[in-house]
Image (cartoon, rainbow, N blue to C red):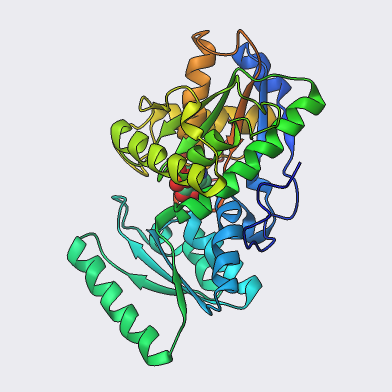
Length: 351
Ligand SMILES: Cc1ncc(COP(=O)(O)O)c(C=O)c1O
C-alpha cells in the first residue's frame, strides 16, 4: 500500500517511533489496564507533541525556500519551545510571539521552564502582553524587522494547528495502531489533552480506515480533554482541522463517531492547576515514575483517572493515554503544580 504521507514535504524531528508502554502500577490503582504512548519522548529539545506537527510544517517551509519561522503561544508554550529547537536543528531563524494567557506573573513563570529553553535555542521572543492590541503591535514590529532583514518567513498559528501540522498526528495514530496490533490489544479509548485541536483531529483522521486498508483502531474512541478553550470551541476546532486533514489525505474523516471532548477537568481556566490535576501529577509520578505537565497532560490524566475510577472506561478494553509532553512547563510552576500534602518533602528550613 502507498505511504499516505508520500506527497508531503517532511523533515525528521521526532527520531523514530515513540514507545507504547504498559503502566502496571497505575493500572492496579485505577482498576483498568492503562498504556502510555510516550510522545513526550520524541527526540528534539526535550520532546513533545509539536515535533510531529513541525515535521510537516517545517518540511513545507524548507521546501518553499523559507529561512524563518514565526509562531505564537502563551509565555510557557511548549509549541514555541519545540519550534525553537526544531529551527535550531534546521538552521532557521525562529520568532516567537508570546501572549500573557495565564494569570501568573512571577519570575519563574516569565523566565524559567520553556522560556529559558526558547532563549537557549536562540529564538527571538516578542512579548505581546494580554490584549489584542498588544498582539497586533508585536506582530507589526516583528513584520517590520522581517522586512528590513529580507526574511522569507513561514507563519504557523499557535500550537502549529493547521492541517499540515495535524498530519503529524495521523502518523502518530498509525504508529499507535501498529503497536496495539503487536501487543495484541484493542484499546477501548485513547485520552489526549485538546487545546488548539490539531492533535485530536490528527488522531481521529488516523483512526479512519485508509481506502483499501484495514481499520487501524477504528473501534477506539478518541477522548479529548479540553484544557484551553470551552468544549464547543474545542469541538469546532477539532472538526475544522479534521475535515481539512481529510481533504489533504483524500479521506473522509467525518465517518468516525462524533468528536468527543470533555470539559470536566478545565477548572478555573487555561494554565491554572486543579486539585485533580495535582493528584494526577502525583499518581503518575509515584506509580510509574512518569512526569506530567501542569497545563495539559495533568488535566488530561485527571480525566482518565476519574473515568477509570468510575468504571466508565476500561471495562471493555485497555485505555491509552497519549503523553504529549510539556514537562519543561512544570519548572515554571514549582510546587504549585503538586498536591498540598507531600509526605517526605523537606521542610523549608531543612538543610
Ligand atoms: C503538552 C501539550 N499537550 C497537548 C497539547 C494540545 O495540543 P493541541 O494544541 O494540538 O490540541 C499541547 C499544545 O500546546 C501541549 O503543549
